[in-house]
Length: 445
Image (cartoon, rainbow, N blue to C red; front, side, top):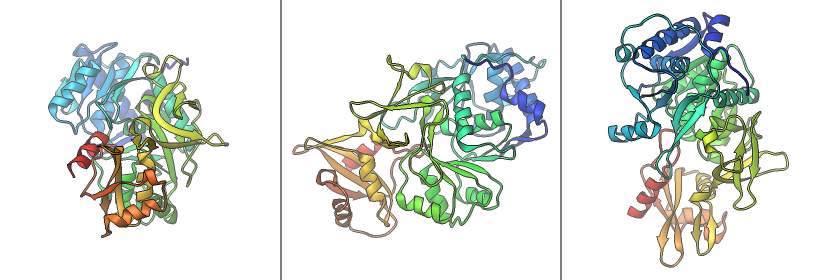
């Protein structure tokens, strides 16, 4: 286990004091200012009794106060618990309870924790201490809290940097929510590298497209639905972009083709909350990739479940055999590249045959009129479960034509028994399909 003496912001403040650390709607901070504000905030929080082992929840939006809080708490040995700001108050309270948060910061940092006291002296950061408590996406059940240490985040950021390379002039555009690991990891990676994180409070396709086209961003993190909306804005190019990370769900082939046509440097990723974000980063234009430095992958013989281990994996997520059992099924090819085939728990059993929803969704998304697709199993007296597809269309096409489209590309048992057209599909803030809501929507049609 490595030992961290300095935190990343303090190191960057020494080495690049005038370099932009964070830019957001509420302003910007250089690394020198960032370090100073983190010290002031930790002093104020210490005055409220926050110390080693404490957990502080927040509903602050993506911005300077959130970034400062994220780096102030580890200086006190405390952990941040970002709550899902899109949940109603009672569900946020439930998350706070599950995470064991002692304090809630839900307003501007200065107002929330009072005036500054004496600056907190630099202290060693314990890499084994809980750094953040994040919640899983909850696409098929209640979100679960995951405890990630500074060591987990260090290993994750190091693996990402090795896969993507590093440029001191990097500006990482992040329109993802910071209460999910994909967004939070951007803030942490930039702090570790001493580069600039550009935070958007919410995804605005026109604004993101403008920033990509004007060459102000070198890296960006998106989910497939965001990229589809950028396409719809007429995005033509991103001249300074050296990597566009895309994860969080299956990517429609026609969307990938559009990205290649416009020479967008797509890097598809695979990861989860329990791994501190990505554990696989594909090469540009590829749909599969190798594990990042430090991560190990294996495929369980039974059920082809993807297994992960390495220093970025939360200790509490490991099974007795020392592996994280992801709940995803997939395969490793002869190059050791991972191909993800869907969630094991989402498998539909129809007439004694297994159907992977992700495969059927990908097939539907290949149709030029289909803008979004979700597939679930609905209880059926004859088949046990019937394969049902819900689609969002960008042009008129009869449902029967979509079934024929699937029948020419899939096995008979994989073809949806019915296809329903809906206005939109239930997706969470990270762009993932919320399966339980999708099932309820399918059952209501």
